[in-house]
Image 1 (tube, helix red, strand yellow):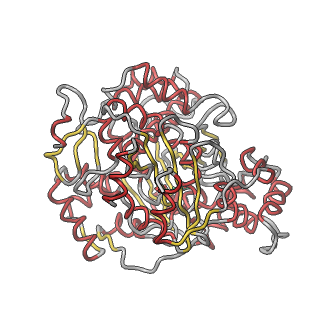
Image 2: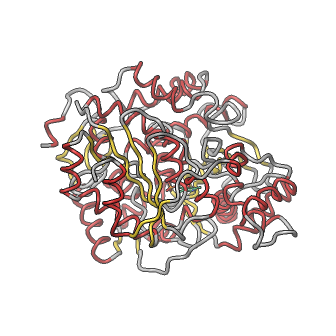
Length: 511
Ligand SMILES: *Cc1c(COP(=O)(O)O)cnc(C)c1O
């Protein structure tokens, strides 16, 4: 069935577990995940020359994004792509005029360029993709001759839910419902979600933890009765989670953009290699950097940074992926993850072997562990380095970088800075390096304040801590966070984990 979507002479997408599958980009975005559980990947990558980079250097962020997206989405016209990209990165959506600025931080022996990806409406890097995905999805639905309204279901532990709500807010032919664990998100994250504006959005807490929310959403996606009911009323389920190709693609853009900006500022000359250090959870962000390298971006090493949940550090050092370990709730919660879904795409690219990837993923599902062979590990290590640090080191790094360079970073970014310092100590590598910064420090004000201030009192309420952080550091509070306090709470829904289906049906008017 999937084979019927093939288009000749264009870039199609295949599946990490079965190369026999071929779909268009639009189909890959609408479907999200292959029916066999594998992930969609492009059959080949566009190749960029120094001349291409030169041309991109002269463009603004929207221009750079249009260039890259058009090479991956042959079924989209240039006008459609420009429409999607312009809507996503419209002036005013990202503060400061550049959606992904690079700033120089003179961090003692470890000088670095920091790529700030948190100037969007929710102050975390998920905006870079989730501002664009809704537009790609609605165009993809049209291309698939689907006239239905997409009902986006999200289970979130914090950042993704809010970014998806902001992205889908008032987007035509979509509705979005976000479930979060009642006691499993930070006060700031809860407030961000429950004050969400838009006519097509809804938020509901569930009595349970994140896994309960996640399994509940998965059950709804495959519930035949509910799917049939939606279908009869002109609706269908869709997903905004990070394995959707439509979320990965927008992330490739900012790696090229960062390099162009370094060329522009004279920090590197054309062709000079750079390193990227990426705070990693589900392996989406760093995988986009890997694709950029394969497309011709001059990259030396990619450093994968993890917190105490260091399953990836161990994997990239030993070739053993083992999720059978204690789960740590850390101060960098968006990286608290033991199954890094997008790693599957890297394994497919490194081996080219769909059968082998399928087998490793089966082992992961059945035993929680797999081990790659020596040559595959070597291939990965040619590009990737890895390091991790715990909460204590994370706070220490925040304090040191602020003290020595006057730069305030959030907890996730601090994990990356610490990993970079370890990497330099181990290798002596002096290649110019870009540390990817994924959230505003104000999004994790409690931990950041405790790292830099003597006056920190854990009992203070969240907005007080935000205010204190501003007073102590002189760094402006981002408008979306400053504005939260006065926004009315719109949602106070709470349901039991086995009532999520009924909640959904009532919401869409079917019960
Ligand atoms: C999601 C997230 C990450 C992890 O990104 P992945 O693409 O899942 O590796 C890191 N930092 C922050 C702030 C995030 O929200």
